Amino acid sequence: MENLKPIWVLAAEDDPDDRLLVREAFAEAELPCELDFVEDGNALLDYLLGRGDFADRQGQRPRLILLDLNMPGKDGREALAEIKAHPKLRRIPVVVMTTSKAEQDIIQSYELGVSSFIVKPLTFDGLVDVVRTLGKYWLSVVELPPDAE
Image 1 (cartoon, rainbow, N blue to C red):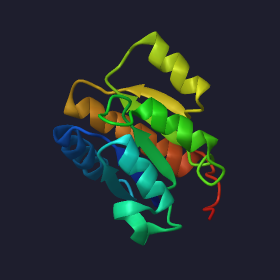
Image 2 (tube, rainbow, N blue to C red):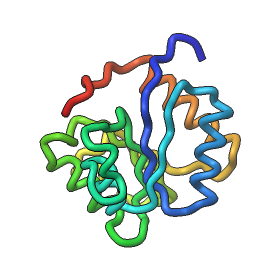
Image 3 (cartoon, one colour):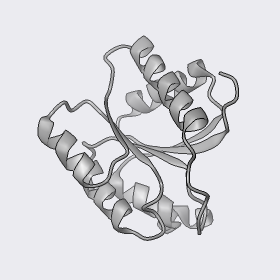
Image 4 (cartoon, one colour):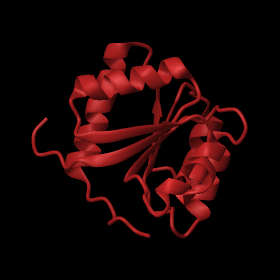
């Protein structure tokens, strides 16, 4: 894809197979992204706030978050609520990418401030198509807020 601005994407996904598929889909889509992963909502907040195992990331924040809803510990809904309530994190766009098609999950996610809600495709080719579309939209079409401390 041409004219894409490189960005840093953080994906919160507990399933190792899904993490691998997402990484491969980003590679296949040839997006200019730095892609990092965390495995649950607690790690997501620690990463974003530079605490615990992620203390070395103090002040460094991704430009886009991909968020699974159903994770152990602090789930995606709880993490989303905390992100959107935090003054230093709320501007980071969050895209929910989950297997859930439940109307309540969709409604609740938007009420909590999600930027987009995507149901994970069932095939790898479908995932690559979604990632390409995400890339075109988030890296080419929209203006992201500036990095903020």
